Structure formats: structure tokens, C-alpha cells
Image 1 (cartoon, rainbow, N blue to C red):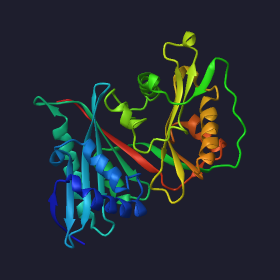
Image 2 (cartoon, rainbow, N blue to C red):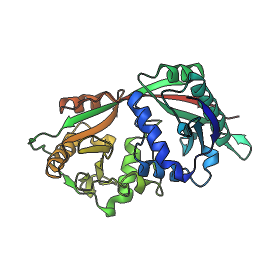
Image 3 (cartoon, rainbow, N blue to C red):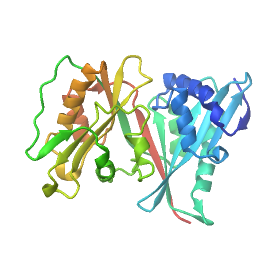
Image 4 (tube, helix red, strand yellow):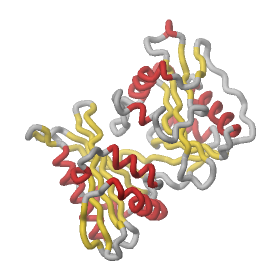
Length: 323
């Protein structure tokens, strides 16, 4: 297989890109969207100027065989954050991977230039555990391994013991009255993770309650008495239907506890609640991702019975100084 020409992605490329992503995920999983609807939303999130953010390689048989995407994720802590994605059909030669990588780094340089000045930036990307070629390209270009994301699964048990809560806390369904407070709680929870998404008011709904696969019955907030905190949202869990799974699976997509409320069993209580509701809703498996540097969370999930799915990946980053 050879790439005959390169073009920007277009909105109607969602179907062939989804097919490419499915093929790539079989050989080197990094958590790519595999449904055309989800890929279409991904392209839409990049804005109308897809030529600025994407590159598609068309093979000699007319199929979409390669894809690159440089997505501006906004600014946080004085750094422009740029997410890089490279996908190549397994039958393509290594030279194509090199070409994709060079294009991505060059495009990232363009994205970080605002008003003629290059901002300080951090480039982040995923690499499958078994992708030696991709890992070599990244390391040779100054990317460093930050962490491994473990993909964990749990068969939903027939029954789960109830989990108690400390006094002054209540498990409640997700409520639009707490939308902004939940966003603030989320961003505080992930403030120490440089690669974590910290949505603003505009992008938060799509990350949580407005996500097309949002499961309100499995999602919840843990609320503290107002007298105990300025923000009553002590912890949160937002669940999604995992549409790409081979059996009914609920993804614990966004789960966290604010620093003042940690080590009190709040995550356990939310997960146990999700187990009960998942079983009654017809789900047979729970799935989540956790960084291997988050030792307390990883230990908790394993204690609750979660095991490795084999679909984890590495996260690598590269810092670019301001010029």
C-alpha cells in the first residue's frame, strides 16, 4: 500500500476515517473513536478550518490510509496545549509515519504562534504500548514519557455491598443547578495533571452532561453541606455508554474527588452506586482509564475488582519554550 496524495480532512470523511481508526485500534490501541458519528463530532470540534488542523493520506486503492491532527486545546498555566494524533494503516511503510510526525510538529509550531510570537507550549500525544516505531519517532524528537494510561474493566457483579458515606455528604443525581460548580470541582481535581482537559464554560457541557452518550442514571454528584465548603460538589462521576464495546459497557468517563475530600471512601461509594445502576440498566461491564502515576486510584480500582483490558497506552509530551 502506498499513499498517493495528501489532502485536508473534510466533514464527510467521518466514515472512512472511522474505518481507518478501527483497523489501527486492532493493531495499536490508543483509544481512538471508532464510530462515524463520534469521528464526525471530533472533526466538528476542530472548527471550520480543517485544513489548518488535519492531513489525510489517500492510498493507491482510493482508501483513506493515514491521518494526522493537531488540535489546539487552549491555554492553561501559561502554556498553549496542543494535542497531536497520528494514525496510519498497518500496511503502510515506516516512511509514512515519519512524514505524519514531521507534519504534526510543524503544524504545532504554527498553532502556537499568536500575533507573530511563539508562545510557550506543550505538545501531548498517545502511543500504543506495542508501537515501537511511533515511540522511537517521538523520543528522537524530544518527547518524554509522562505516564501510562491503564484501561481497566470490571464485570458488573450480581450484587454489591452498600458503601457508607461520612456525615454531611449525600449522593445525588447530576443536576443542572450544579453544572458550573461541577465544572469547577472537576478542574480543581485535575489541576495537578498537566495533560488533563480543564474545560471552560463553553466546552464543559460536551465533556459531561451534553455528551451524546451521557448516562444520567449512572452519573452522580457527592454534595457536602454548604456550611462545610464554598463549593458543595465534593466528588463527581459522569458515565457514558461505550458504544464501541462488544458487550453492553458503561464507561466511567470522568471520576474524581476534590483534594479536601480525598481518602474518605467517596470514589468507592460512587462506583458501587454505578454498579447497582449498571446492572439494572442492562450493562454487563464497567470500564475506566487511570494513570499509572495515580497510585491511590489505581490501587482502589484493583481492590474493587477492575483488571487490565490490554488496551492501555503511553502519554508522551514535549515542552516548547516561548520565543
